[in-house]
Length: 115
Image (tube, rainbow, N blue to C red; front, side, top):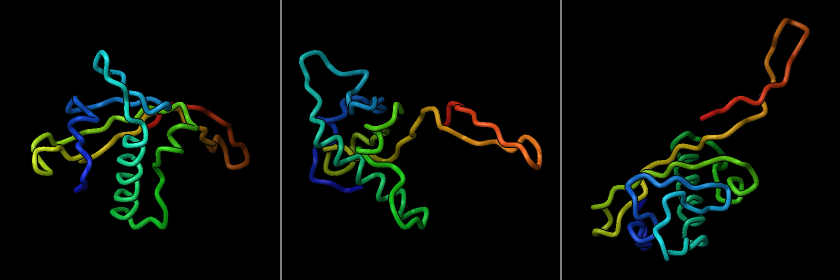
C-alpha cells in the first residue's frame, strides 16, 4: 500500500506485533506509538484486504481491533515507498466465539485461538 506515511518510523521492526491498544510489544525505549497513524495504516490494510477478497466491507479495522483482545502482526518492506517503508500484510490472532455442530440437532459454543 503506497502511502505518504513514514512506515519505517512508525514500525521500526520488520514484523511488528500490536495489541488491542495499538501499542507495539517491541516498542523502542523513549518512543511513543503514534496511534492515529497506526490506526490509519491498519484501516488501509483492512480496506485493501477486503478489496482483494471481493468483500463489500473490511473485516479488519483499528476500531475492531481495539474492541477485541486480538493481536495484529504487521509485516513491512523497509526499502519500498522511497525508503519510507511499506506495510505489505498482516495476520490477526485471537480467540473467536464459534459454534460447532456436534450432531444434526446440537451445537456447542467454543472459544478457540484463531488466525
